[in-house]
Amino acid sequence: MKKNTKNILIATAILAVIAIVLLPKLLSSSEGGKNTMPGGGADMVIPVKAHIVSFTTLNNSVFTTGTILANEEVELRSETSGKITKILFKEGSFVSKGNLLIKINDADLQAQLRRAESKVKLSKEKEARQKQLRDGNLISQEEYDNTVGELNVNQADYDLIKAQIDKTEIRAPFSGVVGLRSVSEGSYVTTSTVIARLQNFNNLKVDFSIPEMYSASVKAGDDLEFKISGSTQLFKAKVYAIEPKIDPGTRTLQIRAICSSSYKELIPGAFANVELNLKQTSNAILIPTVSIVPELKGQIVYLYKSGVVVPQPVETGVREETQVQIVKGLSEGDTVITSGILQIRPNSKVKISEIN
Image (cartoon, rainbow, N blue to C red):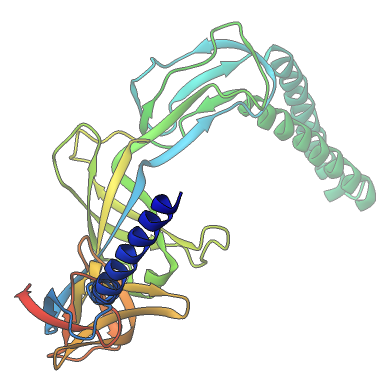
Protein backbone atom coordinates (compact mmCIF):
# COMPACT_ATOMS: atom_id res chain seq x y z
CA MET A 1 0.00 0.00 0.00
CA LYS A 2 2.79 2.37 0.94
CA LYS A 3 4.65 1.38 -2.23
CA ASN A 4 1.62 2.30 -4.43
CA THR A 5 1.27 5.67 -2.70
CA LYS A 6 4.94 6.40 -3.34
CA ASN A 7 4.58 5.59 -7.05
CA ILE A 8 1.56 7.91 -7.37
CA LEU A 9 3.47 10.77 -5.76
CA ILE A 10 6.42 10.25 -8.11
CA ALA A 11 4.11 10.23 -11.19
CA THR A 12 2.36 13.40 -10.04
CA ALA A 13 5.68 15.18 -9.58
CA ILE A 14 6.84 14.20 -13.06
CA LEU A 15 3.59 15.49 -14.65
CA ALA A 16 3.92 18.78 -12.77
CA VAL A 17 7.48 19.27 -14.07
CA ILE A 18 6.36 18.52 -17.65
CA ALA A 19 3.48 21.02 -17.35
CA ILE A 20 5.78 23.76 -16.04
CA VAL A 21 8.20 23.24 -18.93
CA LEU A 22 5.69 22.87 -21.82
CA LEU A 23 2.87 25.30 -20.87
CA PRO A 24 4.75 28.50 -21.78
CA LYS A 25 5.67 27.00 -25.17
CA LEU A 26 2.07 25.96 -25.84
CA LEU A 27 0.77 29.44 -24.98
CA SER A 28 3.41 31.03 -27.21
CA SER A 29 2.47 28.71 -30.08
CA SER A 30 -1.24 29.53 -29.63
CA GLU A 31 -0.58 33.28 -29.76
CA GLY A 32 1.60 32.84 -32.80
CA GLY A 33 -1.19 30.82 -34.49
CA LYS A 34 -3.57 33.72 -33.99
CA ASN A 35 -1.20 36.04 -35.84
CA THR A 36 -1.19 33.74 -38.86
CA MET A 37 -4.91 34.17 -39.49
CA PRO A 38 -5.58 35.96 -42.80
CA GLY A 39 -5.61 39.69 -42.27
CA GLY A 40 -5.33 39.34 -38.50
CA GLY A 41 -1.66 39.81 -37.68
CA ALA A 42 -0.13 43.24 -37.60
CA ASP A 43 2.94 41.93 -39.38
CA MET A 44 1.07 39.70 -41.89
CA VAL A 45 1.49 40.97 -45.51
CA ILE A 46 -1.08 39.63 -47.99
CA PRO A 47 -0.22 39.47 -51.71
CA VAL A 48 -2.97 40.96 -53.93
CA LYS A 49 -3.65 41.91 -57.52
CA ALA A 50 -4.57 45.47 -58.39
CA HIS A 51 -5.97 47.70 -61.14
CA ILE A 52 -4.71 51.22 -61.86
CA VAL A 53 -7.64 53.56 -62.57
CA SER A 54 -7.48 55.36 -65.92
CA PHE A 55 -9.97 57.13 -68.18
CA THR A 56 -11.38 55.29 -71.18
CA THR A 57 -14.20 55.54 -73.72
CA LEU A 58 -17.32 53.60 -72.75
CA ASN A 59 -19.32 52.19 -75.64
CA ASN A 60 -22.62 51.97 -73.83
CA SER A 61 -24.85 49.11 -75.00
CA VAL A 62 -28.01 47.58 -73.57
CA PHE A 63 -28.71 43.87 -74.04
CA THR A 64 -32.34 42.78 -73.92
CA THR A 65 -34.85 40.50 -75.63
CA GLY A 66 -37.68 41.31 -78.00
CA THR A 67 -40.16 40.00 -80.55
CA ILE A 68 -40.31 40.28 -84.34
CA LEU A 69 -43.55 41.86 -85.59
CA ALA A 70 -45.10 42.26 -89.04
CA ASN A 71 -45.31 45.78 -90.42
CA GLU A 72 -49.10 45.54 -90.25
CA GLU A 73 -51.26 42.71 -88.89
CA VAL A 74 -55.01 42.30 -88.54
CA GLU A 75 -57.46 39.58 -87.56
CA LEU A 76 -60.08 39.14 -90.27
CA ARG A 77 -63.56 39.16 -88.73
CA SER A 78 -67.07 39.65 -90.06
CA GLU A 79 -69.02 42.77 -89.11
CA THR A 80 -72.24 40.75 -89.17
CA SER A 81 -73.39 37.24 -88.30
CA GLY A 82 -74.29 34.78 -91.03
CA LYS A 83 -73.35 31.76 -93.13
CA ILE A 84 -70.25 31.88 -95.36
CA THR A 85 -71.21 31.36 -99.01
CA LYS A 86 -67.81 31.98 -100.64
CA ILE A 87 -64.12 31.86 -99.63
CA LEU A 88 -62.13 33.71 -102.28
CA PHE A 89 -58.51 33.33 -101.07
CA LYS A 90 -55.92 30.59 -100.70
CA GLU A 91 -54.17 30.12 -97.39
CA GLY A 92 -50.67 31.60 -97.39
CA SER A 93 -51.29 33.60 -100.58
CA PHE A 94 -50.70 37.28 -101.31
CA VAL A 95 -53.78 39.49 -101.62
CA SER A 96 -54.07 43.11 -102.67
CA LYS A 97 -55.85 45.85 -100.78
CA GLY A 98 -59.59 45.77 -101.47
CA ASN A 99 -59.70 42.16 -102.69
CA LEU A 100 -62.89 40.31 -101.69
CA LEU A 101 -61.89 37.48 -99.33
CA ILE A 102 -65.14 36.22 -97.74
CA LYS A 103 -68.79 36.52 -98.73
CA ILE A 104 -71.59 36.11 -96.14
CA ASN A 105 -75.13 35.12 -97.15
CA ASP A 106 -77.12 38.30 -97.94
CA ALA A 107 -80.22 36.94 -99.74
CA ASP A 108 -82.67 38.62 -97.33
CA LEU A 109 -80.82 41.91 -97.54
CA GLN A 110 -80.81 41.80 -101.33
CA ALA A 111 -84.61 41.43 -101.29
CA GLN A 112 -84.93 44.37 -98.94
CA LEU A 113 -82.60 46.38 -101.18
CA ARG A 114 -84.77 45.76 -104.25
CA ARG A 115 -87.87 46.88 -102.39
CA ALA A 116 -86.11 50.00 -101.10
CA GLU A 117 -84.77 50.72 -104.58
CA SER A 118 -88.34 50.54 -105.96
CA LYS A 119 -89.59 52.97 -103.30
CA VAL A 120 -86.81 55.43 -104.13
CA LYS A 121 -87.67 55.25 -107.83
CA LEU A 122 -91.37 55.94 -107.16
CA SER A 123 -90.51 58.76 -104.75
CA LYS A 124 -88.29 60.43 -107.32
CA GLU A 125 -91.06 60.28 -109.96
CA LYS A 126 -93.57 61.71 -107.48
CA GLU A 127 -91.18 64.48 -106.48
CA ALA A 128 -90.73 65.45 -110.15
CA ARG A 129 -94.51 65.69 -110.68
CA GLN A 130 -95.06 67.62 -107.47
CA LYS A 131 -92.36 70.08 -108.44
CA GLN A 132 -94.16 70.86 -111.72
CA LEU A 133 -97.44 71.36 -109.86
CA ARG A 134 -95.79 73.64 -107.32
CA ASP A 135 -94.13 75.70 -110.05
CA GLY A 136 -97.61 76.12 -111.62
CA ASN A 137 -99.02 77.14 -108.25
CA LEU A 138 -101.31 74.11 -108.32
CA ILE A 139 -100.10 72.79 -104.94
CA SER A 140 -98.63 74.48 -101.91
CA GLN A 141 -94.98 74.51 -100.95
CA GLU A 142 -95.86 72.46 -97.89
CA GLU A 143 -97.25 69.62 -100.01
CA TYR A 144 -94.11 69.63 -102.13
CA ASP A 145 -91.88 69.61 -99.03
CA ASN A 146 -93.72 66.54 -97.71
CA THR A 147 -92.98 64.75 -100.97
CA VAL A 148 -89.27 65.66 -100.76
CA GLY A 149 -89.18 64.42 -97.17
CA GLU A 150 -90.70 61.11 -98.22
CA LEU A 151 -88.04 60.76 -100.93
CA ASN A 152 -85.25 61.44 -98.43
CA VAL A 153 -86.57 58.80 -96.00
CA ASN A 154 -86.78 56.17 -98.72
CA GLN A 155 -83.27 57.06 -99.93
CA ALA A 156 -81.93 56.71 -96.36
CA ASP A 157 -83.57 53.28 -96.04
CA TYR A 158 -81.93 52.24 -99.30
CA ASP A 159 -78.50 53.47 -98.14
CA LEU A 160 -78.88 51.63 -94.82
CA ILE A 161 -79.63 48.31 -96.50
CA LYS A 162 -76.74 48.86 -98.92
CA ALA A 163 -74.39 49.43 -95.96
CA GLN A 164 -75.64 46.21 -94.33
CA ILE A 165 -74.89 44.30 -97.54
CA ASP A 166 -71.37 45.78 -97.60
CA LYS A 167 -70.82 44.28 -94.15
CA THR A 168 -71.40 40.79 -95.60
CA GLU A 169 -68.24 41.22 -97.69
CA ILE A 170 -64.84 40.89 -95.99
CA ARG A 171 -62.15 42.65 -98.01
CA ALA A 172 -58.40 43.00 -97.48
CA PRO A 173 -57.74 46.29 -95.60
CA PHE A 174 -54.18 46.34 -96.97
CA SER A 175 -51.95 44.27 -99.23
CA GLY A 176 -50.28 41.31 -97.57
CA VAL A 177 -50.17 37.57 -96.97
CA VAL A 178 -53.27 35.91 -95.56
CA GLY A 179 -52.65 33.09 -93.10
CA LEU A 180 -54.42 29.86 -92.27
CA ARG A 181 -58.20 30.10 -92.11
CA SER A 182 -60.30 28.67 -89.30
CA VAL A 183 -63.59 28.43 -91.24
CA SER A 184 -65.03 26.71 -94.31
CA GLU A 185 -67.79 27.47 -96.77
CA GLY A 186 -71.10 26.92 -94.99
CA SER A 187 -69.67 27.86 -91.57
CA TYR A 188 -71.77 30.21 -89.47
CA VAL A 189 -69.69 33.12 -88.20
CA THR A 190 -70.32 35.91 -85.71
CA THR A 191 -68.52 39.18 -85.11
CA SER A 192 -66.20 37.39 -82.64
CA THR A 193 -65.09 34.67 -85.08
CA VAL A 194 -61.46 34.99 -86.24
CA ILE A 195 -61.52 33.89 -89.87
CA ALA A 196 -57.80 34.33 -90.61
CA ARG A 197 -54.93 36.77 -90.09
CA LEU A 198 -53.53 39.16 -92.68
CA GLN A 199 -49.94 40.40 -92.40
CA ASN A 200 -47.92 42.93 -94.35
CA PHE A 201 -44.18 42.21 -94.66
CA ASN A 202 -43.02 45.38 -96.46
CA ASN A 203 -40.96 46.09 -93.35
CA LEU A 204 -40.59 44.16 -90.11
CA LYS A 205 -40.60 45.57 -86.59
CA VAL A 206 -38.69 44.64 -83.45
CA ASP A 207 -40.58 45.21 -80.19
CA PHE A 208 -38.53 45.29 -76.95
CA SER A 209 -38.16 47.04 -73.58
CA ILE A 210 -35.20 48.54 -71.69
CA PRO A 211 -34.77 49.41 -67.98
CA GLU A 212 -35.92 52.90 -67.05
CA MET A 213 -32.36 53.98 -66.13
CA TYR A 214 -31.57 54.06 -69.86
CA SER A 215 -34.74 55.93 -70.91
CA ALA A 216 -32.97 59.28 -71.28
CA SER A 217 -30.22 57.77 -73.43
CA VAL A 218 -32.31 56.33 -76.26
CA LYS A 219 -33.91 58.30 -79.10
CA ALA A 220 -35.53 57.73 -82.48
CA GLY A 221 -32.90 56.94 -85.10
CA ASP A 222 -30.60 54.96 -82.79
CA ASP A 223 -29.13 51.84 -84.38
CA LEU A 224 -29.43 48.36 -82.94
CA GLU A 225 -28.43 44.82 -83.82
CA PHE A 226 -30.18 41.57 -83.03
CA LYS A 227 -30.00 37.83 -83.56
CA ILE A 228 -32.68 35.17 -83.74
CA SER A 229 -32.68 31.55 -82.66
CA GLY A 230 -31.29 29.15 -85.24
CA SER A 231 -29.31 31.78 -87.15
CA THR A 232 -25.81 33.20 -86.73
CA GLN A 233 -26.57 36.24 -88.88
CA LEU A 234 -26.49 39.67 -87.25
CA PHE A 235 -29.51 41.74 -88.29
CA LYS A 236 -29.69 45.54 -88.17
CA ALA A 237 -32.61 47.80 -87.30
CA LYS A 238 -33.31 51.42 -86.37
CA VAL A 239 -35.44 52.80 -83.54
CA TYR A 240 -38.46 54.68 -84.91
CA ALA A 241 -40.94 54.87 -82.01
CA ILE A 242 -40.69 55.09 -78.21
CA GLU A 243 -43.54 54.68 -75.74
CA PRO A 244 -43.98 58.05 -73.93
CA LYS A 245 -44.60 56.36 -70.56
CA ILE A 246 -42.54 53.97 -68.42
CA ASP A 247 -44.44 50.82 -67.44
CA PRO A 248 -45.02 51.21 -63.66
CA GLY A 249 -45.27 47.44 -63.23
CA THR A 250 -41.98 46.42 -64.84
CA ARG A 251 -40.15 49.78 -64.63
CA THR A 252 -39.22 49.44 -68.30
CA LEU A 253 -39.66 51.58 -71.42
CA GLN A 254 -41.14 49.97 -74.53
CA ILE A 255 -39.34 50.67 -77.82
CA ARG A 256 -40.05 49.70 -81.42
CA ALA A 257 -37.52 49.48 -84.24
CA ILE A 258 -37.90 48.79 -87.95
CA CYS A 259 -35.74 46.66 -90.21
CA SER A 260 -35.64 45.78 -93.89
CA SER A 261 -37.95 43.12 -95.28
CA SER A 262 -35.02 41.79 -97.32
CA TYR A 263 -34.14 39.54 -94.37
CA LYS A 264 -35.94 36.40 -95.51
CA GLU A 265 -35.01 34.51 -92.32
CA LEU A 266 -37.16 36.76 -90.14
CA ILE A 267 -40.65 35.56 -89.26
CA PRO A 268 -43.16 37.58 -87.19
CA GLY A 269 -43.41 36.24 -83.66
CA ALA A 270 -39.77 35.13 -83.54
CA PHE A 271 -37.67 35.74 -80.40
CA ALA A 272 -34.86 38.32 -80.80
CA ASN A 273 -31.72 38.96 -78.74
CA VAL A 274 -31.26 42.73 -79.03
CA GLU A 275 -28.18 44.91 -78.54
CA LEU A 276 -29.06 48.61 -78.46
CA ASN A 277 -26.10 50.94 -78.97
CA LEU A 278 -26.44 54.06 -76.82
CA LYS A 279 -24.26 57.17 -76.78
CA GLN A 280 -20.52 56.87 -76.07
CA THR A 281 -19.16 58.19 -72.77
CA SER A 282 -15.67 59.70 -72.83
CA ASN A 283 -13.43 59.91 -69.75
CA ALA A 284 -15.26 56.99 -68.16
CA ILE A 285 -13.79 54.92 -65.33
CA LEU A 286 -14.14 51.14 -65.60
CA ILE A 287 -12.89 48.65 -63.01
CA PRO A 288 -13.23 44.86 -62.69
CA THR A 289 -16.63 43.85 -61.30
CA VAL A 290 -14.99 41.51 -58.74
CA SER A 291 -13.51 44.48 -56.91
CA ILE A 292 -16.94 45.80 -55.84
CA VAL A 293 -17.84 45.02 -52.21
CA PRO A 294 -21.55 45.40 -51.31
CA GLU A 295 -22.40 46.92 -47.93
CA LEU A 296 -25.58 47.91 -46.12
CA LYS A 297 -25.13 51.58 -46.99
CA GLY A 298 -23.96 51.06 -50.56
CA GLN A 299 -20.84 49.76 -52.25
CA ILE A 300 -17.12 50.15 -51.63
CA VAL A 301 -13.81 49.18 -53.17
CA TYR A 302 -10.50 48.61 -51.43
CA LEU A 303 -7.66 50.94 -52.44
CA TYR A 304 -3.94 50.29 -52.05
CA LYS A 305 -2.27 53.24 -50.31
CA SER A 306 1.28 53.06 -48.95
CA GLY A 307 1.08 49.32 -48.40
CA VAL A 308 -2.21 49.24 -46.52
CA VAL A 309 -5.88 48.72 -47.42
CA VAL A 310 -8.16 51.78 -47.46
CA PRO A 311 -11.94 51.36 -48.07
CA GLN A 312 -13.51 53.81 -50.55
CA PRO A 313 -17.30 54.28 -51.11
CA VAL A 314 -18.27 54.35 -54.81
CA GLU A 315 -21.34 54.76 -57.03
CA THR A 316 -21.67 52.48 -60.04
CA GLY A 317 -23.18 53.04 -63.48
CA VAL A 318 -23.26 50.84 -66.55
CA ARG A 319 -22.33 47.19 -66.05
CA GLU A 320 -20.58 45.16 -68.72
CA GLU A 321 -19.73 41.47 -68.72
CA THR A 322 -16.57 41.78 -66.58
CA GLN A 323 -16.37 45.51 -65.82
CA VAL A 324 -18.49 48.16 -64.14
CA GLN A 325 -18.52 51.92 -64.59
CA ILE A 326 -17.70 54.06 -61.56
CA VAL A 327 -19.51 57.40 -61.68
CA LYS A 328 -18.37 58.68 -58.28
CA GLY A 329 -15.67 57.85 -55.74
CA LEU A 330 -12.53 57.15 -57.81
CA SER A 331 -9.95 59.30 -59.56
CA GLU A 332 -7.42 58.63 -62.27
CA GLY A 333 -4.34 56.93 -60.81
CA ASP A 334 -6.08 55.25 -57.86
CA THR A 335 -5.00 51.66 -57.23
CA VAL A 336 -7.97 49.33 -56.77
CA ILE A 337 -7.40 45.91 -55.19
CA THR A 338 -8.97 43.16 -57.32
CA SER A 339 -8.08 39.92 -55.48
CA GLY A 340 -8.09 38.62 -51.93
CA ILE A 341 -11.21 40.67 -51.18
CA LEU A 342 -12.43 38.15 -48.58
CA GLN A 343 -9.06 38.06 -46.79
CA ILE A 344 -8.28 41.73 -46.42
CA ARG A 345 -9.73 44.25 -44.00
CA PRO A 346 -9.28 48.02 -43.61
CA ASN A 347 -5.66 48.80 -42.64
CA SER A 348 -4.48 45.29 -43.59
CA LYS A 349 -0.92 45.24 -44.89
CA VAL A 350 -0.73 44.13 -48.52
CA LYS A 351 1.74 43.95 -51.34
CA ILE A 352 0.90 44.08 -55.05
CA SER A 353 1.87 40.91 -56.86
CA GLU A 354 0.32 41.78 -60.23
CA ILE A 355 -1.25 44.78 -62.01
CA ASN A 356 -4.23 43.83 -64.18
